Amino acid sequence: MAIVINGDDLTTPVLQPGWTVVDDGFGLNTSTTVFKCDTTFDVDAFAVKGDPHPDPTYSYLKLDKWKVSWDSLDIATLTIDYVGIDTAINSGVRTNPNTSSANGLTTENITTHPNFFTTIAGTSYAQSPLGPLVEIKSINDFVEIVTGVLPDGTNITAKYNMKQSYVGANGACFESEEGGRFIGFVDPAYPNFYGKTNYLATTTTYSGVIYSTELTDVQALLALLNSATASNSWGVFDLLPAWAPIGAGSGTGNVNLLSQVNVESFGSLYKIMYEIRYSKVGWDPLVYTNI
Image 1 (cartoon, one colour):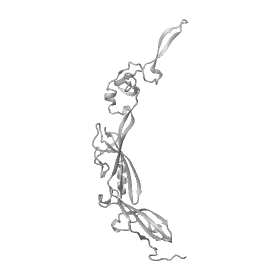
Image 2 (cartoon, one colour):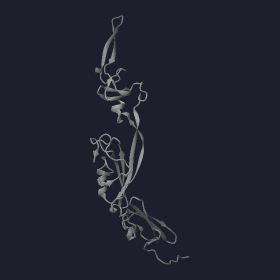
Image 3 (cartoon, helix red, strand yellow):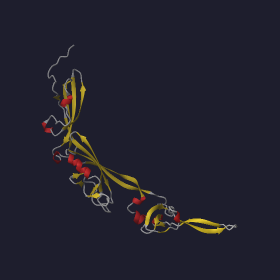
Image 4 (cartoon, helix red, strand yellow):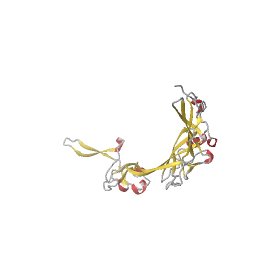
């Protein structure tokens, strides 16, 4: 039996009722629309990336991707996804940051502990009572001493390491009396430190995402990579939530460092994913840019 066509011939896609708009709570809006059209319709010419939403109220939403299903009776179902920034949020230029934190413990070398050269290893170092513990790197560090004579008159000699080592608090051993290279905790009288090389340090990182319509936002954030701030902002970019600790550290430098910025396209937007590392001591301005 031949197909009997009634109503719209669907040579132009017809928007179906029930299309949706979703707000993620940070200013990103997405919409899914469904069109019906004839299977001969040129979908590629109709669904062009970056085209505006069919409803004028949501024209700020731009086409991101689409899919088509080939149905019975020569009808095709075209599903289109749109994405954009709510114009009530930051004038529609960028979303508010969506940030989460991860907190835990990680293994670090004991010499990086902020108290290492104070209460852990001490501040002064005396000659080690355990003898020389520094590796010999030159023949000049040896001395030969005659320790006896064989019956045939041959001298018995021994070689001694003349390089000393120095010990501070808790059996912390160094290669010089000024400190120098740390050899290790060498005194078993301090079992909590003896042989230890690492400790568990607290670590806090923030991961977040913002969306922007502006290429200049991407370039500005990339330029701010490896910079530390005492507030929740890097320039015009508020990247940290109100509950995040801010300020200067107990040492020198600001506590929050922008450590990663990744970018990808999302519709006509730029999706900017970032990571921030927190340091209680602060990020030293001699090493990191502080703003």
